[in-house]
Length: 399
Image (tube, rainbow, N blue to C red; front, side, top):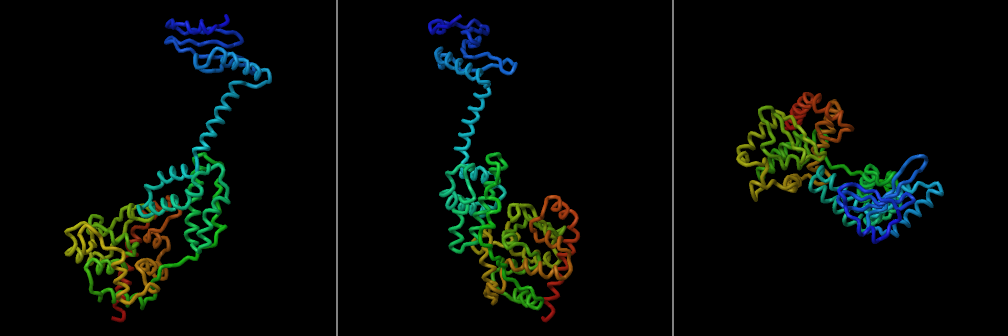
């Protein structure tokens, strides 16, 4: 039967599903609770199919009949109206996703997942690059519309100012965001890939270090003769033996040390590579730690500052001591103790893989990392004791 608006308004639920036909495949599906839904039954490619138009009265009788006629016209042209509707809906959703997925939106999503793996200082630096440099230029652009020229445009001003390292850092950051966009299905290709090749190369500068044996011996004797604040003195005495990054030692806590087993476990939160690092302790280091414990063992920190027992010495304090000993910035730095150890240990014939593992440099893959942790430990113990004995020999050589 043909519907009228009066008849439709008068429909009452019966507690059962009702299917009331208007002809041409159009019918009203009435639920047991009284909801009224327009539907159209049709056949396409030999299969029975169903098309939904919406609920009455939001879709009026007149609108429902118009939609039915449009569907019949599509069928006459060999078009499946249901598939056409889905495609149109998907296109609308895709458009909304594209408008939402701007560079800033994707970058913030990436950063939220990546930030927990970073130190607070590094995270703050990346956030500053994003918010102060990249977002003002790229932030509002959909990632699907970005071109290589967009990234070069935002990075090249730093390069023109001679800030080549900053330019490379910004481009690598752009690449991390675009790779995340590709991995999460926003784009098919990483348009920032390889763009660092369009930038002037960075001239690598190494930390100044004393690496000549006679110079190392003199430096060690100078450190022994230095008179200053206890925390600074012992930090400088221990650092050559353990050759960790300066901050890893400077911020050390007594709870990290197992003196009985001669091991220092540095937590991942303080490591550059964000993984725990173990330092075997030579006999000489154990002796220094026992001496230091007399002065600072009642607190948490090995090297508390003069201001408070809960505040570590600053990185400037041991560096200033080196300067007062006469070692300028072009001669020796705190990081230079790592270069000193790496250079001499390689020349002394220790295996490069073991040296790299002890330096906590980035491993090429997690399988090798796991192997190094387990298999190299005894070699690392031997290396650390041999290194300590070697340093003592240099110190005493011309004493």
